[in-house]
Image (tube, rainbow, N blue to C red; front, side):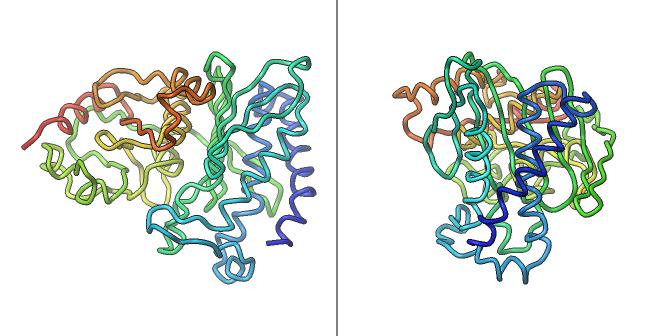
Length: 333
């Protein structure tokens, strides 16, 4: 663990130089917020990708030590790394930043209000930690940046099991293939299906949502079409699988329509998905006001002081498919 911490400054410097160069040349990044998202994604990936690809190296690192706790929400040393990186990054930003890291469950403040506009930043350092034990190759990290009105500025999703980074800014999205060993960067085509019905569609959700949750999906009309998810995941990897062919194939929808996701998970994946053109609605069929949720959390209002607040969410390729899923999941047998 100490060796990993010692390596962070140099990795941050290397990642900063690449992100800054991309921003200055306008090759991959067009906004300051996008550059910070790319900086974080590169740094976190540079540390965790090599370890997650080598079980022996991961065990030797000591990062899997900690409290496995629930099968669904372990708390390990490896979960700490992304928060350390984000803290380093935003402590170097002159302008004010309010940073929420999932594992910390608090807002940390950096920078001076006199040196720029305030950003609200949310980070999921390591999505799908529980999958490490089961050798599920679905680990990702995500960052979302908004202004103080909750308006989207930029977001990034980086795979920690392959070379993919999705960077989304206000005016577009780019899918990046970053080969760290060769220090080579290429862009990939974002590929989406046009699925509009439940016929043969492929879905990502948490497998336990089908039978083990308080509101199981197998008690709805939805179960006539699916007995289990095509991808047992809700998060960054499911989102990446909606725009490229990953380990588990293309995905048409990623859903948690009844029990819902914790607010900080829902806003990171949902806001990024919507800004890149995917359909995102709640279980009532209406658009989710992510900005309002973020501001309530940032202001620590009574409504969201309970960090377990959940947001039912449906993300799909088309509005037609979203509405059909919503209809079926809300229909009791």
